[in-house]
Length: 132
Image (cartoon, rainbow, N blue to C red; front, side, top):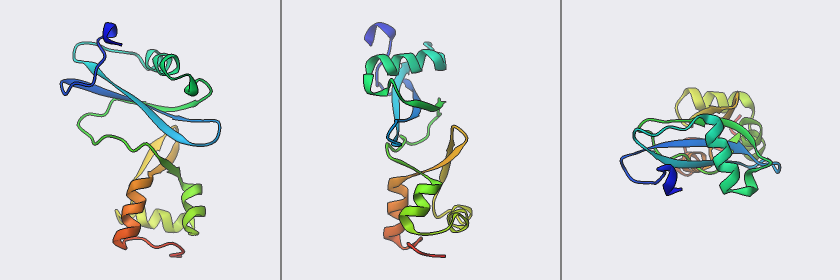
């Protein structure tokens, strides 16, 4: 990887590929690109699939180049799974989102929630299971 100028030093720009595995799990692959270097989304996906063979069957949801945002969570839950897990309606999830209790992120046209953010909201009492 060093030949490509890829590393995880602070002066690098992070690039993320969010993908869904055949078993339904959503995860991400990220690398740091030294300033002045660049990769197209297609090159980034090819690199991910070459370096991590387990991702070869994955469906790519999004490629992002966030600027100064926190490191992305590795476990994502879509709206349907969140509703089933907490036994709440989509309307309740949307209400929590509008109130800022949980934050959803669009990836590949679908809305996902970081598991650790939902767990935190549950622990702090901001949201409750079966809160219809």
